[in-house]
Image (cartoon, rainbow, N blue to C red; front, side, top):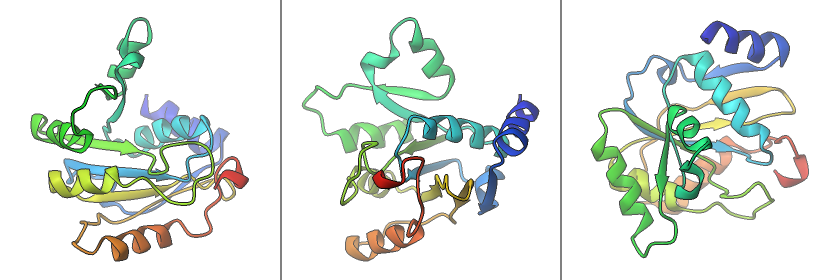
Length: 182
């Protein structure tokens, strides 16, 4: 199916991949992958195509209600892991444990936590990476230039402000599918 994904991604949609080759050679078995700006349902489609194009198995989390019949099997086949968002459990700890339970787990999410315009990102992904002791890999959803730019692995430090400034700079000027939400 990789050949079909490449035809759709490169030829039909006209997208390109720029950046980190480590991402696609699978030497990093565990990571938090953040995709931004998240402005449209089409971001999911581009992300699914990108992982097929580069040949990398990735995962995502979703509310457990999404993982029921008939879509439950589909989301699990795509690498989805259900979480209970209603429980009183610490979500960072619950998700960090997913990394312990798997030999290979690359969790992809949108740091904005919404497709609407936000002034700052949620911080959960950052603390998940710190607790799980895994790198953060960033990739852009640049609909203006039809590019997915992929960063080198970035390990969070103890300087939260500097780390977020570094990550925000990676996405500076990138426009999502709905530019006013970027």
